[in-house]
Amino acid sequence: MTKQEVYLDNSATTRPYPGVVRAVVEAMEEYYGNPSSLHRKGVEAGRLLSRAREAVAASLGADPGQIVFTGGGTEAINLAIKGTPPGRKGRHVITTAVEHPAVLNACAQLKEQGIEVTVLPVDGQGVVDPQQLRSALRDDTYLVSVMYVNNEVGAVQPLDEIAGVLADFRRAGHRPVWHVDAVQAYGKLPTRPGELGVDLLSVSAHKAHGPKGVGALYVAPRTRLQPLLAGGGQENGWRSGTENTPGITGFGAAAAEITRQGPEGAQRLFALKKRLVEGILAAVPGAVLNGPPCEQGNPRCAPHIANLSFPGLRGEILLHWLEGQGVYVSTGSACASRKNPGSHVLKAMGVKGEQLEGAIRFSLSALNTAEEIDYAVEQTVAAVRELYALYK
Ligand code: PLP
Image (cartoon, rainbow, N blue to C red; front, top):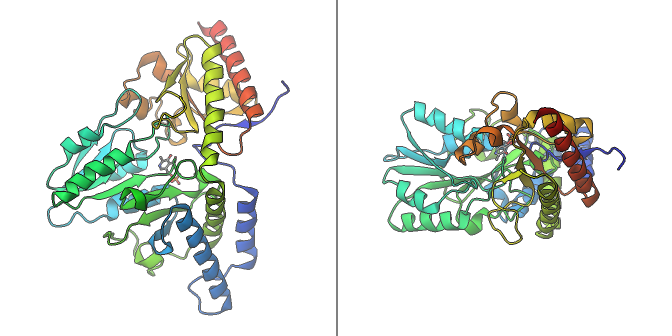
């Protein structure tokens, strides 16, 4: 096959849709007013903002009034975790060992303020046991934060069972706030917080073909939240600061595309992931899939993230080799890869030694094609064979 460029690092970020780019440029060129201004330029910018809010709300099955625009997924998560008031009795928070650092480090900050944090373990596939959540809940638990899709291995957490556990806890008179980091699920799996009884849900535009530095927090009715930023009271008082109109407009365009594609997009993505995983596992003896098995109908397996280990090779070396052939992948998550070689997610799953060191993540998007996947399989198999010949 002739050399191609195949971008398979979509969990780090995605390529914006052309319609997103056009929307951002148009907002910058034509609608540069401040949405709070009273004149026509302000009103026009405000209208753009409202339209984007409606599109993002529709993609989440929510009302526009439940959407708070933020400067990305990390900020939405921080607002959820640090902005949830503990209340009179609240002293305890529960999260999981495989969360994104935005969640884990926000919880670490709560800990410094005297809040107790329980970190739930996961099984060998990266999945949390809802019964362990049930056992961890206490009278003073005021916040539970469990992600939807893990960004490193694509494990889908059992949110419906978690909703059941929390519903039982609420029936017993408790009022915990439930936050879900849905950054990696948004645009790939149905993300409808109202149907699950989620109170707060974070999403990020750039993981779903929107612009970087813009995200949203869904806030269910009657959820108490304190703003992290003091200022002019934009976004219903929850997020002060002049709105990023171009970014939000681009987010709206990406959200409209998510709504348009519906659930079919996930089936197509899953077929591509299966082709990739099966192609590599069949050709490379000893290669291992980290995370839930990639099987049709397995609800724990996300359609777009595959983490594979090639024991005896270092993930980083394979990554750069593949880069030379035009195939872009990552080791673990993009934010962890520069500083921390051992993924906290794989470690929490019990992955050790050569399997830990030899892990790379392939993450797909709606823009990938079957031909690209075949090229990536071919190049990965060839790279691994050559590297094994050199190193083993
Ligand atoms: N949560 C998860 C699961 C992620 O994968 C990421 C990004 O890698 C984030 C949160 C942070 O989102 P953002 O890059 O928009 O701050």
